[in-house]
Amino acid sequence: ILGILSTTLEGKVYNCNKYFLDLLGYNREEIEKNPLNWRILTPKEFQRQDEFSVQQLNSMNYMQPIEKQYFRKGFKKNE
Image 1 (cartoon, one colour):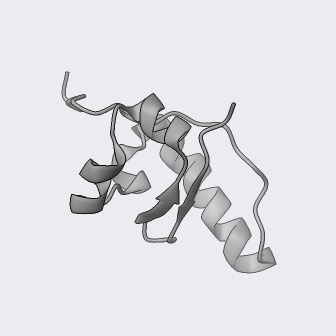
Image 2 (cartoon, helix red, strand yellow):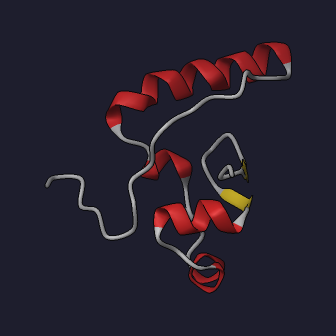
């Protein structure tokens, strides 16, 4: 089972499956009121990989699938 999401390059998550929501601790109603942003949910150690993927997408019109981590709901970055 995979968490799958569709996003803009700016970070807005405009579609995702239930498994992705479950992994992050959100439900559909919450994200309809307050959309998720993958750039904000991404830990610092994955940001470089994300930028490479965005560059790849811009230059070649595709990107390789990646595995990464996201902050779960309620996680405070400074903890």
